[in-house]
Each structure stands twice: as structure tokens, then as C-alpha cells.
Length: 111
Image (cartoon, rainbow, N blue to C red):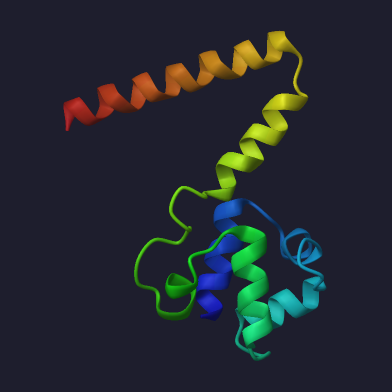
């Protein structure tokens, strides 16, 4: 489970300090969890699942999807940051997303 906690944190793009801050843990505590120095208790499992919308079955066993169905927290983070941008920058972001999606699609067709 410690490796899956690290995977959640890295997938979301957090440092250990930032990840821990959102759930009331210090950077050292997060590091100790990720290296299996500290025990992962039931309260922490529930907290991680609620705060980051993690699929509890995946966290416990590694089976299934990392996120609860339809609740990918990366999308929420993108949306929250997108709303902060001026309309011109929002349009720029959309153009980049379109460009990246097109590039990926063309790359997949070549393979």
C-alpha cells in the first residue's frame, strides 16, 4: 500500500509536503508512509479515499482503477486552476489541449 500512496501523490503532482498538508500530515509522515516506516491505519485509508477520491479497493489491493468512477481529482484540479485564468489565457489553454490531442492521435496512427 505504501507504493500506491506514493503513486497517488505523484500522479496528482504533489510534493510530500503538499500532499500531506491537504490531509493533515507532515512531509516526514508522508515520507515514512511511502517507505513503510509508519503503519497505514484505517483512518488514514478513509482520509485518503475521501480527500483524493481514491478507490479504496485499489488502495488496499492494487486491483481496479486508482480513482472512484467519475471522480478523477486531476480533473477537479485542472478545472479549479482553469477558472482562475483570464478568458484569453483560457483560450490559449484550450488551443494547447487541442494541439496535444491532435498530436497524440497522429502519433498513434503512425504506430
